[in-house]
Image (cartoon, rainbow, N blue to C red; front, side):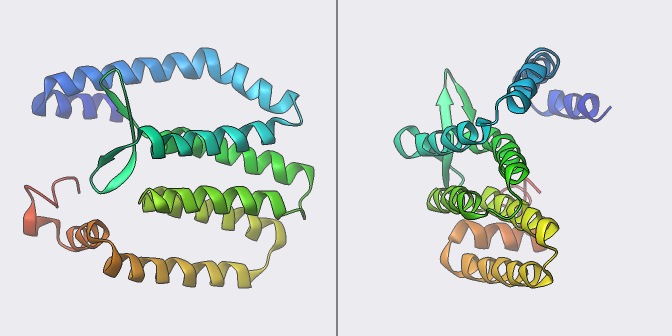
Length: 196
């Protein structure tokens, strides 16, 4: 239903974009039906699949440093045959599967998960992809919190997130613009507030 509504609205705004979006929807369904079961089978069959996700994730993120394209202040886009995409979107799946597999092996062994999470978040910050970095941080902290049950971890992460917001507001102009637009999107609806 939501896909239909979005396609109708997008068709009204820009028919070429709607056609491209429809193609992505079809590809998504094909992937979910045919390739996702193979992918999940690989994860559950091979015990070393977490290492595969770790290496694949770092490789995907590092591609942006070499071939990256800067859009809206963040250097986190790759362009392939007139298609722009963010490797971090694919990495979100890899990251969740990696943590699941890593913590399945040993619930108290945090060294590798901390290393991979920290490296991923650092690379995302260097590419100025703060939204994805925040998602990774929250997912990781939630995993640790559910495993240990330590409320201190949750409170500490909350302080880190808030300090990140405040420092990001003053250091990076595009974050400041987004926060101002979020507070009042109607102030500049045809420019900064348009996406909201």
